[in-house]
Length: 207
Image (cartoon, rainbow, N blue to C red; front, side, top):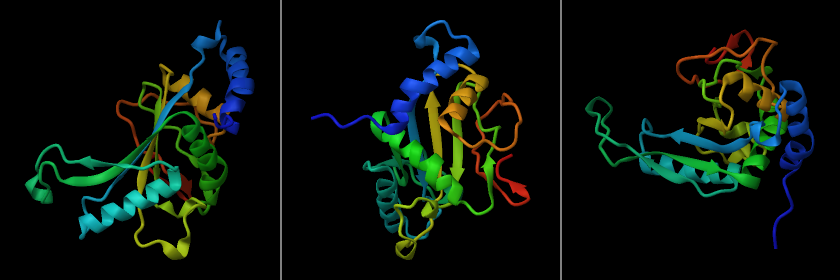
């Protein structure tokens, strides 16, 4: 028995595709950019007790995403950081399909607005190839996480991978989905992806 389609996925099919075709002049539906996957990644390499920190990070990521994370492994040794090749240094989750849409809907509608003095996310965290990376300082913004049960703050990056071929296309797609970009600045092409955090108070993270 198949699960019902996610609300955001249904909105993409019924409203966002026609809206993007009209606004950007796409000739057919296959030209319209789409969401491919969402990758949530966290690092615990600097934690005093790496093993315990890794288990906490994996538990929190699974709670937030609804999917079991995989461990990320160091590819080479770095003596200055006391890092050995093959050592677990973090965890990540790759979401596709229904889970991807459900996560993005919760992120945009519930989690981001819970950030104190939230003023939107950066316009400048696109990588030039249609992908966007958002930095989250800790897991407490997600309602699934009970504040009194947090053992360790977990910061992570959320990378939204799309089929868009440019920053402008990607921003148009994410804007239609509801991503709350700060201000009315146009998207600028950057050489390297820049993790974006919410703009709070007088400072803008990664801007």
